[in-house]
Image (cartoon, rainbow, N blue to C red):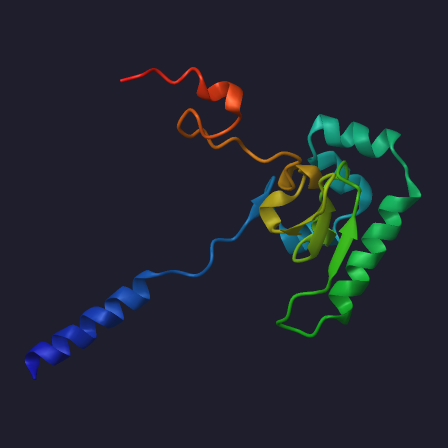
Length: 154
């Protein structure tokens, strides 16, 4: 009986060691606080390139895209993921209103699913949808026939 009690106590200790989720802060603000900030206060928190982006690029597609994302989040039932919104806007900077959305970002060939998380705020959408397939270096002689002739004979 003592061994079983000790095992139960140890399992309770292991469960209690694990704390709550780590809160994400962007420049001292939590995500829900960032959403409540106005446009000008939010822009002031971003890095210089993003501030310049918002100052010079005023395209109607970005606002339409944001409205579609917010509409999809509202339409989704609580506890479920919203529908995927596809876009070609790779140069759009991720804003706090976009967090917890599903976006299909075009990479030149197809749409890559990106689930927007709080730590992505301030980055571009295109950063999360690679336009190339990373090279996997293997053994020589597995590709083109011209490369095969350079294999040394043992």
